[in-house]
Image (cartoon, rainbow, N blue to C red; front, side, top):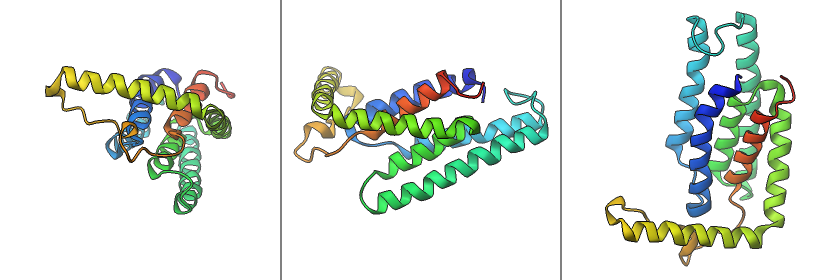
Length: 186
């Protein structure tokens, strides 16, 4: 996967994931479906001789697609098991699976390892992360009060039902950015 196109798509998407997960502990299905649709366009464009995969031969395109799909399905299956046990959120599982599509199939293991390490670091820094969440949520709330036409809902991290645990979208975004910026297989 050429990192330029991936970064053009993923930087704004993952930035939104980070904000949404920090403030609301929610990763929107619309974003997940949009990322899937954009990824599906890559092999279709390549078959028409367009896009970043246009220079690849048909066998290379099949290798990329099959490797990415296999990784995504495996992550989805394992993630569903973890979701069923209450260990992770459904949005986190879906985001991990979609990121497996966008990450080069030869770099999937590095992505999973870096994401797990980032999640561990977030767990260790949970008290500091809570302070960052509260500060961001207060700023977001002030923005909503200053501009009421934006209809910004109160961040759930400021409500009585404050979600527990780690906003794992931040770890997933960190793993994706690291893997795209420093691919093992160039």
